[in-house]
Image (cartoon, rainbow, N blue to C red; front, side, top):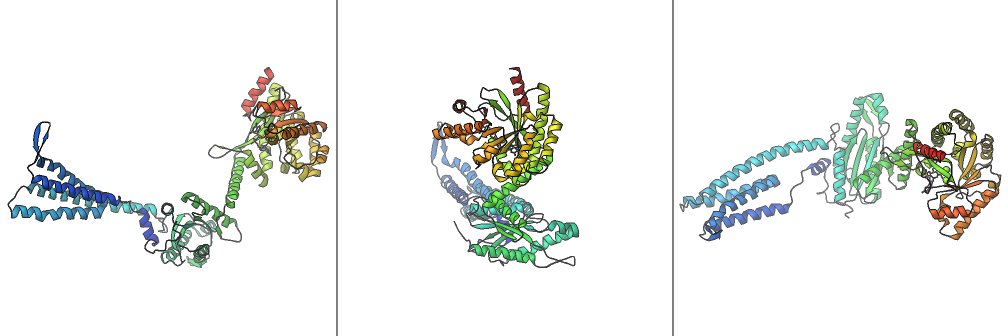
Length: 580
Ligand code: C2E
Ligand code: MG
Ligand code: MG
């Protein structure tokens, strides 16, 4: 890894770098040497054969070797033509020189020695020169046109700076060369409001002025590093910095760009002060490819934008988590707005496989159609204060479906819904519950609310009161994921619940060690002592089922007897159980 590229010859101004990026890739030098060698070899053999009287026998016919010289002459000419096609100016002048130096030889043969045998070769040469001139002139025209197109494709029309395409190309070429560099992502602060209040023309003038200032910094190397500035679109710019000695150097250079940006700007007679948010990431320390590096620089820039204290932020790995959380939060908000949060129903059975009911589980899809796991989005919804809306969306949907199912079939099964502690603790939770029951027409006795045992620790008194009221309405209470929290037996003793749900983690371990089996057995016994029914979650194997049967578990919920189903499939299951 070359840490620094200090040779000024390799590090150029923005325009030179841009030319370097967009220039056509030249054919390998090896091809040039090969064509040259082939041309000379073929010409030499032609010369030898043309003076030779040797013969060869082909299919019984005797042929003079000189008759093959035409083939080799054509090959020699092809070599110079290919050279012009692939090597442009260099190829043309090489080919021209080779062809021209043959003239004096041929002419002296004809004029002095009166040997007219090379005469066809003379015309051949003249003809080849004619062809390569046509090819070269055409090549120059196409080249100029292509160069113009490439320049346009790589340049931002408003500011004249390189654009996103050029920036990406440079980043990729630096990654290919394994050069250390930093990508700085810059977004102007409050540019939208400047545009809105002062008009787009003023906005454009500002963007141009910034481009001019930064171009000067980069071209005159005022920051102390070798830089490339691009406008990515809107009020977004990127700066690529190379050849810094230390991280302090790098930061100093970025601060220089910041200070130049923040200098007073006079646009349309108005004094303006512009600032920006700078986020940066370093290759290869932060990422080993261009795309990830750029996205990390953006992540850091967004952090800078949100930060009240710093406008320059270096990317760190913990930002990814925050970024991911924010992304999920955005998706939850969008799903709530578009009403696309839906639910699946996982069946619960008694130990002899009779249907007990269903647990409603929230589902959410990503824009690409992939399901985002509730394990991922429920905690985000809880922290963002959106869980009550998510719970309600699932609850309302499942309750409506369930109400209709009961009216249709008259089945006596239970609908369990998960309610987050934060949701339950809201003052209007009970009103919401009553309203849902009334509108959906579910008998209270067929509804169960699942809460995690953390409620007993976090908010014991208030929660207890609320749960008592829920039970007072006839609704059942289940303690979800039992055994994973830190609830003490004394809490459990007072807790007004109906069902204890043994967490999957215990069921997983149950048949691996005797202790785990005894632990599950103990939970079931405690549950029964407290007058709770006990259901085991996450039962996947026959062996687990047998053990649970033998230790007195009441109910089973797990993939062994039923995965979460769509409402349609859940209805089919109910119909099958009714007719059985
Ligand atoms: P939970 O309430 O303990 O739900 C049971 C989870 O275990 C579900 O995962 C279910 O699909 C999974 N499961 C059941 N049997 C098996 C099995 O045999 N094998 C395996 N590998 N998994 C099994 P899911 O749907 O991913 O839900 C995860 C958690 O998200 C739920 O755990 C619950 O805490 C939360 N959640 C789901 N929907 C809601 C909701 O509407 N509101 C709230 N507040 N939380 C919800
Ligand atoms: Mg649950
Ligand atoms: Mg659970």
